[in-house]
Image (cartoon, rainbow over all chains, first blue to last red; front, top):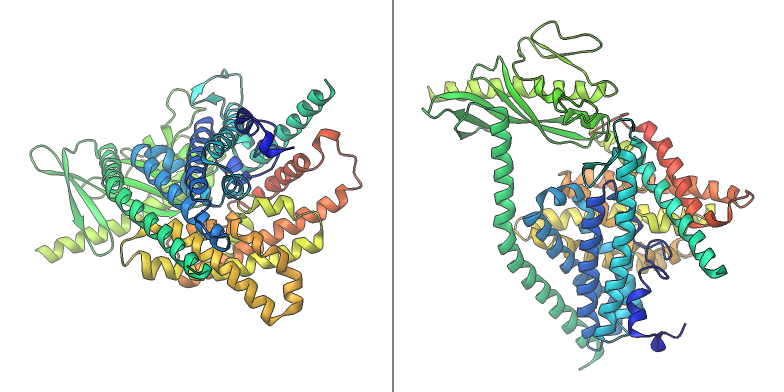
Length: 204
Length: 198
Length: 192
């Protein structure tokens, strides 16, 4: 599709579904699986990633004419790592419980292919406004998937949603859902579901 | 400016600015993070030494002991952090014990990565509606001499016995072993520190 | 003794891919053919071991003495990125066959979260130098193991009748889930 002809709104919307980083491009799978054993963890990781991808995109697209081509990747990862450190310390200082639950997966945002991918594919070639929308859309698309996965896994695996009991005493939690295998299964089913939805939309 | 000179200048600038931003952010957040750690430590000590009003840190070569004192300043118990291997990784536990190291006043699991839903019952057991924290709470008042033992499938008969968690026997045993080992160490450390003073 | 435990723990019990979800991008991308899975596994193990050593040195000889732990992430990722480039140049000079085997995978490794994850875990667990090194080799072996098993299954899968909407990534995830379930059988085998 013609990138430069795309409307401004499209830059934002595409990340939510059509080019969803997790479901379609399979980027950022590591955090999508590792921290989604509860809805709140998925939400926190989604917010942190959105913050990092948006701030890095703003900086990188404003510096796109300054950074020499040969050292662009090195510059990008320094900028990304800086914002990740900011987010990591922010969580540790203000939300210690969540920071503890996410553990080393917060610093691992640095190597989330989603973020570097957006810089290389979009922010380095587009003006600040568009890059900001693109990054926000991608970040929110990522957040949505993480929150959905976290919600499914928490409800089935612990019978709770945001730590409130939603399923009654009759429900025996499916422990496997909060364990690593449950993460893979839930994401596999979610990708299958999104394929089905896309197919239905294409037919309609 | 030649390309390579520009490369070096730009990269150096980015790294320098990044370093500057981060070090100021560090000086803003570090005290808050430190504060959280302190609050966490205090809460844990309060949980395991319910009778204490304040505590002194007793820094020994091998470990730090927290000597709890009541409002009158009399020592009421000692708390210390015990660490060891659980089922999947390190478990660390704040242990509270009377001044003579014979009876536990409480334990609190600080860190663990046991299997969710099974081993994590060492912290809280949601299936046990009446009292989800029955496992750690049963350590209150347990006698430590000659050592704490784990039993299964029957109610505790002696004052040194604690009940294992069904489905998480290894985690239960691990907790008891960590406490037993650390108690022995803490006791000998504390007593040798007393000898040095006197 | 602890060294052996660290190795087994990193390779099977706490497999990087199947329990920590590290290195999933290549796990999904490069697990279609057994031969490329083996090469990728070797490349990752190689870089992991070296970066485990280098990041340990950076952290303990530079960041800690000067109290600049805040620069941990920035310096680790810079070191890993430059290391990958150096390794690529070195391999190209030294051994043509090795370069042909690993060459195209090396640049992909920079954003392989397993490498940075390894460095971060080694710091969190206060490993000493030798332990970090063994941890790197073990994690690399575990990564290779998971990748090779996966590639083996996916080669067979081409003959299977997968439901339309589950072809590709979806079925890969579900297989990975079954593998993770199998690997859970190792949990509790040893713990450190």
